[in-house]
Each structure stands twice: as structure tokens, then as C-alpha cells.
Amino acid sequence: MRFKWNEQNMEWFLDASSYTGFHKALARKIIPHLKADDTLCDAGCGLGRLGIELAPYVKELTAVDVNEEVIAAVRRDADAAGLRDLHTKIIDAELLTERFDVVLMSFFGESDFTHFLKLCRRKLIRIVSASNSSSLYPERYRCTVKSVVPGVEDELRSIGIDFSLEMHSIEFGQPLRSRQSAERFILNNAPEATGEEVADFLGMNLVDTGRDDFPFYLPAVKELGIFTIDKESGK
Image (tube, rainbow, N blue to C red):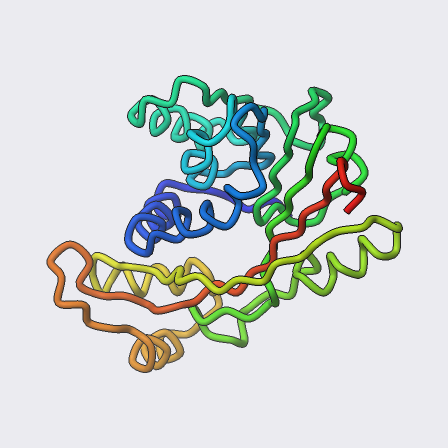
């Protein structure tokens, strides 16, 4: 099921990216895989924070997403950053036919690897969560997904594709502007949670920051894997 963006969760995501520096830190892990003359496709880019960080390190970046609203946000932020070589396409990434030197799939969900391998001339990079665990809302409401490191490893081995894998841990908690916003955040992720469950979870996890802009914070470390399929070296 495709993630559904709305005005509120877009704000939370952008706040978290800025507050923690998650996408800047993640970009530093990806940059060594890129060349200055690469064309890079950020497939299923969402709000495009990783692509915006990577754009200065490649010749041209194309951010692709099916959601018009998030592409508008990417375009706005790219223009604000003066990124003239960042382009956007509103299309389901699985329908792309254009080829690129490097294709990036960041927390993309389940997909057909063979399709995206056909799109890249040099390298396919896929970033996935290490596991289904999360600390940002009550555990009993966390959904199991297949697109985590062990599942992707099994898939690649089953179809005989060589790959390299790097594991990383990067801070990616949620800053919050009020206690009410914290409660809404929990219910956005766990709509069936009771008021008591929300209160108990926040009581155990919500941190007072002492800041005026984000007085509360839900700490979390994102455990992730970066799969690289190098078509030049066969790995």
C-alpha cells in the first residue's frame, strides 16, 4: 500500500528531517557511490529531502513521484536551494522507461527489482529499514512489511543478483511543537490506540527539549541498510 501524504504528516516529516539532520547524514553515506557526471533518478522520491542533498554531487537529478502535492513541494524546495539541475516527474516510478546512470530507491516499499535494474546504466542503490521495529508509537500497532533488510537480501539472492550491503544507524526522531501535536502524531500512526495508550506512551518516551520551536521530542534511531548493485563491476 502506497504511503498517503497529507499536510500534517508532510510538516512532521520536514520538521524531523531538519531537526535531526537525517537526510544530510544519509546523503553522506550515498555520495561515495556517485560520480560528478552521473544522471541520478530518485524513484518514489516523496518530499525529496535526500535527493536535494545529493543533487549538488551529480550532473542531473530527476525526482519521480506519483503524488502531485509532494512533487510541488520538491520543486519549491529545489528552487529555493537554487538547484537548477534537479528535475521532477509526476509518474509512478514503476512505469518509468527513461534510463539513468544511477537509480536510487529510498524506503520505496515492495517493487520489481528487475524493472529498476533495466533503468540504470551504472548502479542501483536501494535503502531499506533494517527491521520492522520502531519506537515512535506503541508497538502493538506497528505493521509488518517485507521490504526490510532480510527480505531484500533473500529476494536478491533468489534471483541471482550480486550486491553489497552497508548497515547504518542514524538519528531520526520526531520533534513536536506541542503536547497536542504529539498526541496527534501518535494517533496518525496508530489510529486505533486508546487515549490511555497514547498517554502512557508519551509519558514514557516524550522528552522536554527546552526549545521554544520544538519543546518536545520523540527520540528514535533509524537502523537501515544500503544495498548497492554495481553493473560495472558485477556486484
